[in-house]
Image (cartoon, rainbow, N blue to C red; front, side):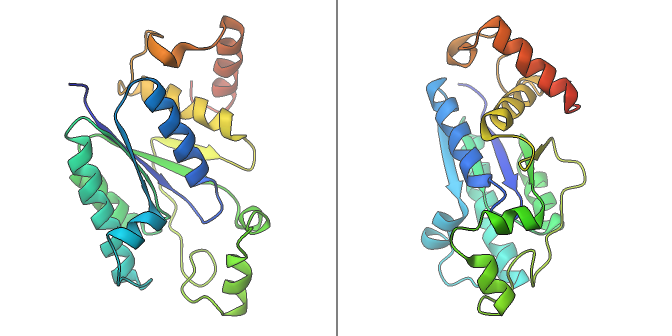
Length: 203
């Protein structure tokens, strides 16, 4: 059985976590991997009903996600989480509980996230309609040493997916021999991706 692992996306609302998580899920599925996407909104609806947005409740929600991700990944599943998970200490606790843990910092400036906000959540947060909103009235603590650091205001989603998969291969979590569905690129495309990764400091 292939070894599972957990891909833990963290970042502000609107940074691009869910978009990237879904693209990664789709590609891993095409490769024949068993994958489960643990979206923050779905978890709150199905696993964390009754929890609010105080620090204690946010921590409890993240620990529930980590518990599920640990069970999945130790049974050969790739668990992908896409919750904001704003507090560094609780992410570190999740890391300590999950043996193959890959933190993906989806880094995007607050002003860009606000521009992307189709739901108007930031506007409501700034007006006081939404309390304890991460980045406005509640802190976000960025990772200090994530395995993967993306800059979604500079990179498009496909570039970010390439960065993620290249790093997963470097970490030995995916095969590096180019076999399977993951190798659907020409040599020219692979050279362009490699050059991009070098420029970003990943290679």
